[in-house]
Length: 255
Image 1 (cartoon, rainbow, N blue to C red):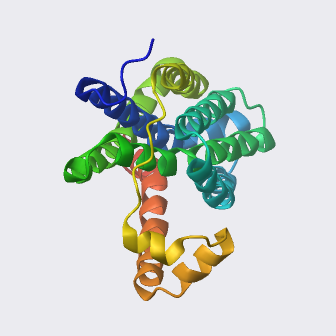
Image 2 (cartoon, helix red, strand yellow):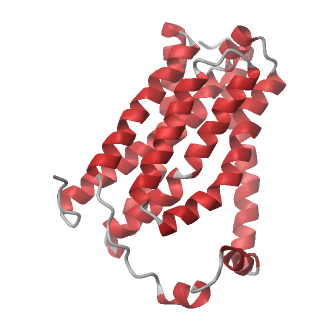
């Protein structure tokens, strides 16, 4: 039997699981960055192809799937959405380790993007209902910390595992635990009652279709400029994050 949803200890347990989901989310996304030269050598790829694998194949799918999966989390069980998303991106990360050519690797990375698009929105929504408003900011910080742990852990572990076992087993070894975590999440996390939304938000968006909500956001200058700024930062930051390990290996000979 699952623990009571409103138990303080159980809420901390859910917070710990959401933290691990955030870790795997970014780890599975970024681990490829430290495996670039190993994958290139094995599959006879060039840097342009690796850029497509790490960037476009992932981000294009993430872009297309993000809003529909967030909408699904609004309407359906967020626990099921998080568990399914984690299962898909973890399975696709492991599948990338079995890729035999460029097309298979791209397909696997698109699968990672599809899964990860559903992780963050539903996780944020879950935390808002498991944690009282007075502690919500601290709870959300767990997601940010998990992302940083996943980024650093993915690069450090990925580099070590690739040296020890090869790039294929490095990917499989981070994908399989995510599949197990997805099952644990699905079987042990309860769907909490949704807290009433902020009154101002209800008045502004109540009864509107998805297109209507997007149009309302597009007419909100603060949202538009925040989105543009975040996009510009992300393009530069992700470009650096994905290629910096390869730069350090090629230019400075780092292991």
